[in-house]
Image 1 (spheres, rainbow, N blue to C red):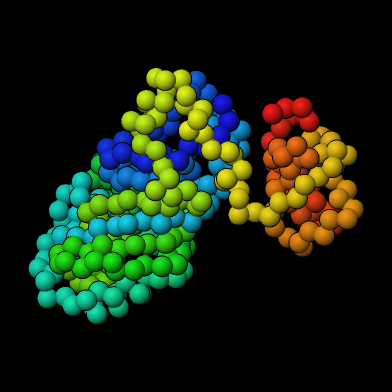
Image 2: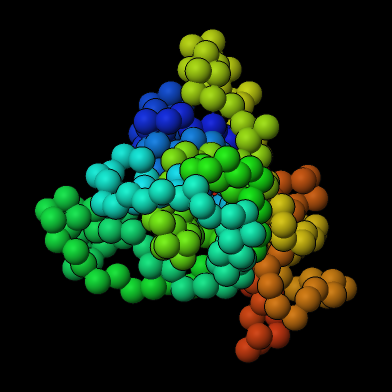
Amino acid sequence: MDGILNIDKPRGKTSFQVVARVRHMSGERRVGHGGTLDPEATGVLPVSLGKGTRLLEYLIDAGKTYRAVVVLGVATDTYDASGTVTSQCDPLSISLPDIESAVSSFTGFIQQTPPMYSAIKSKGVPLYKWARAGIEVDREARPVEFSRIDVVDCALPQLTLEVDCSKGAYIRSLAHDLGQKLGVGAHLGGLVRTRSGPFRIEDSVDMADLDAAWREERLHEMLLPIDIAVAHLPSVEVGEADEAAILNGRAPALPSWQGPAEGQWRAYAKDGRLIAILCRDDEKGCWRPRKVLVRSAGEA
């Protein structure tokens, strides 16, 4: 079973639990997701099956959009509502211009320190395990990008933000850091991922829909084509000779195709099958298969 499911992850479930459920329903061993969502967060979780797992890196690397509720005046150790309160302050004197100015300081490329309650490892141990043991571990700040942060609602002590960001960005850390910037503390009160790369929440299916499709033996109807994961890449159709070369791991000739000097391309066979992702070999001045997605010209 090859394809991608655009799942609206429910609150209280880990991303791994959703993957395990899909693996059980589909009977497909190769299942993975395109970017972790915290258990209390909801929204878009792309889940790839079969050959779709070969393209997971493109889903993980894709930009994300979130709708985040930030609660000002209360900071917690987890940076979200599940944690222990570490400080409290009255935030009602803060003005909207103050908030918008603080928010703008996080827009663009910044260095962000991951929260202690995260799955990032230190000395081979996830940070959240150190945190649960009461041990604070030094964390190295990481470069992330917030290309857009809009204040869409302000009803103190709550703010609602809409955020476009790169992979690796922690919205919990953004909420915490915004509270620090404003001098009142803050935590993340709620989070919905509304977009992950090409997948949007309005097109997603919930777990109840998937369960119903599984019981009715029509789960395959929910699957989207795997090339949606790389729809942002340009494409080229290759002839039989080049297809044979690609499927055997060799560079295609593509004598009349003027490709770009760099980047990656989707390569399709004449019958419309996505057969590989090509990348530029600058040293030899040719294109080489980076990922071959079928084993033979006759494989579906």
